[in-house]
Length: 509
Ligand SMILES: Cc1cc2nc3c(=O)[nH]c(=O)nc-3n(C[C@H](O)[C@H](O)[C@H](O)COP(=O)(O)OP(=O)(O)OC[C@H]3O[C@@H](n4cnc5c(N)ncnc54)[C@H](O)[C@@H]3O)c2cc1C
Ligand code: SF4
Image 1: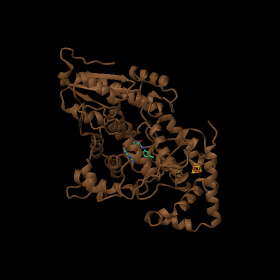
Image 2: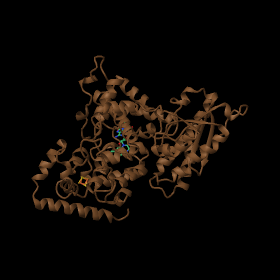
Image 3: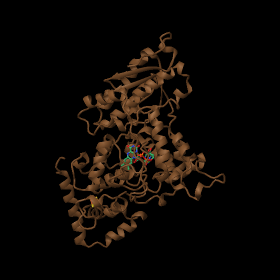
Image 4: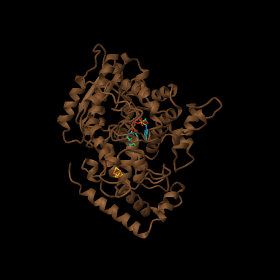
């Protein structure tokens, strides 16, 4: 597609940097420190990578269009660009190119999958690996913050706040007197204030071409393509962030846990795909949020997500080599029931589940609480295989990459890694869903009378009672469970089995 622009010099006169699909920013790492005229970048579209999983069409379009736009942006800066469209994997292409370009530099890949693929190239000296400059924290601070497993995000977050001085007073106390304002961020949304609408974009020829490619070559992949919702240029990314900062973050905190049929994003920022591709740099969004005039509960809530949860999840993934090497006493539970067809878009009759699934296949996005307390909750209550659930999230969401999707699904939203880094399982009955959303009003089930989720919750607690005894955060639900009669508990288990069977045989839409 693009070739080195400056033909008066040989390719070996430049420093060649491999820019993977998720390092698309010239303001960090070796691209930031080498003058454009002395730099070349290698970018690869690998068909082998795209074919590895049935990724949502929207994700393929997002990644490919951002890669292509980034290549053009760098060419405009005077960087030489070698853009390869290959059937092969990245390692094969880099080996081939290194014969012509010499040793190629890259920042350590964020995804374990890519690190594993490139390990032989690094060992052979074909590729020189530098630390990844996009993270806000390093492994030392993660380790300093935890004496040993089980790991706790709060300990990590407080250590990072103290050591970085972010949202800290000069006297060493957290701004506002507390490290977390989470307890204030649990309001149901009842129509006011009006949430901002997600930005739309006019597809340019690059995005249009990518859209045609995805529609043609990946027709069998799931999900709808909507090019007008895809930010693809550096300018688009800046617009998304400015919109998030000005329009979403002022109300981000109070409605962080709210869910609604009519407003799927509410006051969430939708920046995760751009952060994970590094179109937006985490350090910029944290700095801007800290400097902005925002209510403290919203400001702290946002900082905790990016500086706390996002960094913590990545450390957990790397520390365990993607859960292949677990601390003593921990075990990965991957098996269980097959994922119901409802997750692939067949109606289940559960309005909460069907609404969120519909949104995911339309947009490749849903916000945190719908991921955790609808999709994760339902799958856990149904005893779905944590691995199948994780693989589903991996293909369904545009922001999914191994370092972030696996810890969130295996460790937080399912019982894949009980207790390794969460203090309680995230499960609930229908009362929570009704309290935090308006889904129940649109459902054929009545939340109090015949909704299967509450009996499934009791049935789940009963099946897992032995594992949960001793967890102080589960003491109250277990006391309530003990008050249920034997007949009620037998009926609970029956509802679970019937719901599972019904969802396994759900009719296609
Ligand atoms: C089951 C499950 C699966 C998830 N899968 C992914 C995934 O594949 N990719 C992904 O980026 N996030 C994932 N998350 C975390 C979180 O749900 C998303 O980052 C968030 O919903 C993205 O939407 P947003 O940008 O509007 O976030 P906002 O609510 O506006 O939050 C701001 C930012 O905080 C960061 N953040 C918040 N929570 C987390 C978290 N738990 N882990 C990592 N970053 C976090 C994200 O970068 C996000 O953009 C998952 C969470 C759950 C419960
Ligand atoms: S009634 Fe039950 S199934 Fe229906 S939306 Fe509410 S919680 Fe979901």
